[in-house]
Length: 81
Length: 161
Image 1 (cartoon, rainbow over the protein chains, first blue to last red):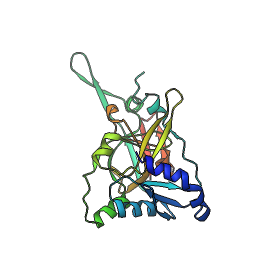
Image 2: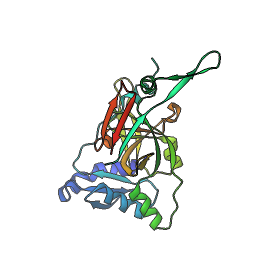
Image 3: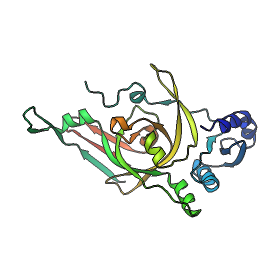
Image 4: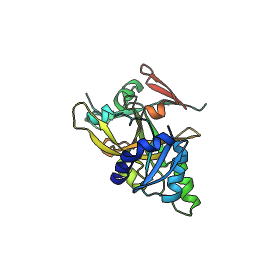
């Protein structure tokens, strides 16, 4: 999912960041749709153009959040001792 | 500030078919802090789709477990497909004991039964939760704007949004 968009982001994020540090970007296929001040603005722009289709939204200059969901990944949800 | 105070109730069936009520403390221990929620497409996305004359799938209702151990809110992947949520990113979910896995990220809105507000979780992670009887795991991305009081001895918890 979003393979092309992620590859395009990885290749161009440093140059975009120089002009728009901290901005949120929307990428579709191999096109930068725009840069935005907040994630809400980015989501609105993406949905305006692509509706419920997938599009990439990321913030420039911010390392990806390390997602940790131990109860889920360890299979412990609803564990019954 | 809306306040939701929950005291769970429940029971079990004895071998001779009799239903026995359990103390709230035991029910909370068994089920954890769960709340009834209705989940839909994130509000900002929904507004745009409707303005363009599009239609939205009906929201989905189910149980959410408040999980203070989770960095990020998770939505059941099957429900995400039913809601036609647009994937807006892919993240790697780290695990100490299993291989890390890639999961889609979705913008969702959460309406908590009993509270007159809608919470947006713009970067919720898709996960297989249905088998656990859950629609959502509410993680610290949502909890960072809440006050949660877990009162084990009384078998109740309070959520303030």
